[in-house]
Image (cartoon, rainbow, N blue to C red):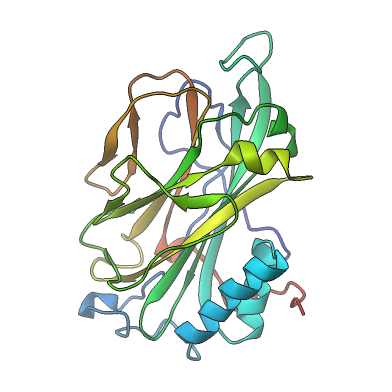
Length: 280
């Protein structure tokens, strides 16, 4: 495959009022494995060779030091024998005006790119979640910080004890909200600061540790949301429905939009087909 993920058309649910709609939702396949219901991160034939946590952690250090994008990083994983699954999605959204709200006179369409990469390890599995935004948003990215979340049905995965999340540039743990649930994670992203110090598309990532405990590759799904804010709205909590679809609840529908995607394991692309040039 080439450096871009396959994009398929689909629609899940209505976005917030400033969102145009989804350009497509692709699948995130074989995150755990067909046999993961036996329990624990080693109960799978997911990998053809062994992916060790040591090598994976090395990839994160190299990515931070060398500034790799998602495709360069995935190429390194493939070139070093780590077995992973991956997906990408483009979501079309409408940017707010410079004054902080939607406008029928100034309503610019743009795309958010959302990526997930699931890598199988010896002691734990790894889920890399990342996003990128158009450079044109640099005039519109405003405080306060944005939020990025993942969620899933609680019986399908467990977060691995004893591991902290790893964060890319301008990304950190979300303060002041309930960000560490048993079936979700929320991080904060300083889009305003990043936009002002970037040329071209800008974005970041976070990495968390988990493993499959139930369901099947066809039923296990992970949901990802990017919450863009341009006003200080009250956040009333994070809610996950019975399917594992979660998101932040705000005090009103003004001053923010949401770009979102979801994926089942059986739909994801195999990392062995990743043919980008391996970074040095």
